[in-house]
Image (cartoon, rainbow, N blue to C red; front, side, top):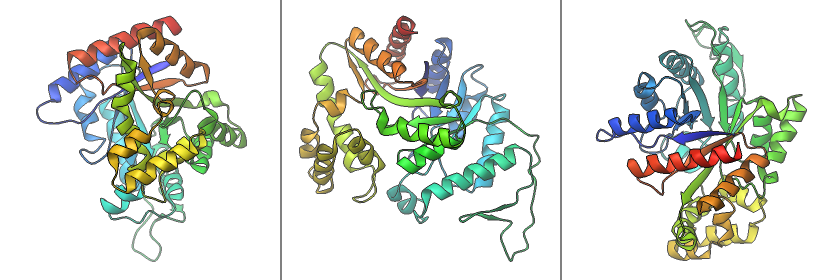
Length: 345
């Protein structure tokens, strides 16, 4: 089982520190570094900055939103990063959710899985050096009844792995059928069937083995003795995922927790959050909704928790280390985790 890190937000006052962070991870043997795209930065530009400051670690988007750019621009950006990194780039894609897509990008959140699938199809046409001719439900290239013509991107064929951030059953099946990797969230190694059963089903239908898919799962890690304090600190973040990461009718994070057996709790927390009762929503989160989805506690506890991820088939752990500020404390925490991983390799 490999390790991955989150790069974090790039700002004018922390660029050198971000580069140090990724180089430190590289020295420790971390396999991937992911750049996010939320409402502070695009995912691609920080990777261009890091490309000549690293040598071995794979740089990846985690994720590019497929509604924020056309498939062709997504592919061209990926090819540019492929070149700048010397072939170390991985393209992480996701559909995001209606609040961001419709609120920030002004694009209707209709048929998100179809848009994701067609984006992957078109990117792979371009990566293969093929002429871009595609007739889908969302994208038609060239545009019908237009002066457009089928073009070929001026780039040699390139091998760019595609990771998909998916949570819903149909999207997970598609991931199993088509993706090089899965970017999993709201995942518990105590309830792996809530996600992996659907990925396995899609892989089987496509004649693929699960070993062909890098199962890259996010996990928040904190090492220390005061476990109760850790749990309490993290309840608000869980409540935000359950209530704030989506609308009242579309929240893939909430759905994932419900599939894992927390239906009543997830609904109750969401209801409180959407009613503006944020403190009450956090209080309503049971301890198990924190501990079953994260790796918290003493070094021995965290080691056994990470072993549990490995045992259920996770191949890459994407570490969330927000318990330590970017700097020496986070560098040290990563070193501790790397040492623990040697014990369970």
